[in-house]
Length: 101
Image (cartoon, rainbow, N blue to C red):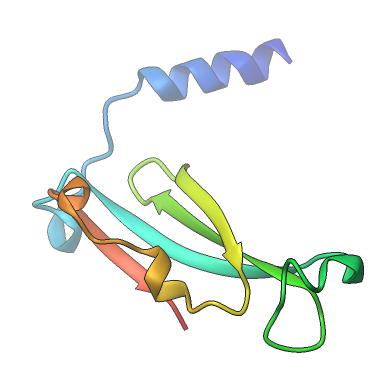
């Protein structure tokens, strides 16, 4: 555990990742993705999916530069994912890679 903690601290003290070439010119690139997860059938009325199952959609924003989740939230699986990606001033200076299919 001590070695793992030392490795984690060394990573956080390391200089920021150099995003050169096609990734250059921005503070970081974000990957946006959504995943549908099935929940208990007893929740079908509260969490309708696109089929017969109860389901939720988990929307995640990941940092390409540091490889860590930046933020996430859940929505009903029957809703389209694009409405859960508001593009506003908070995205200024960031690149965006997204798959909302």
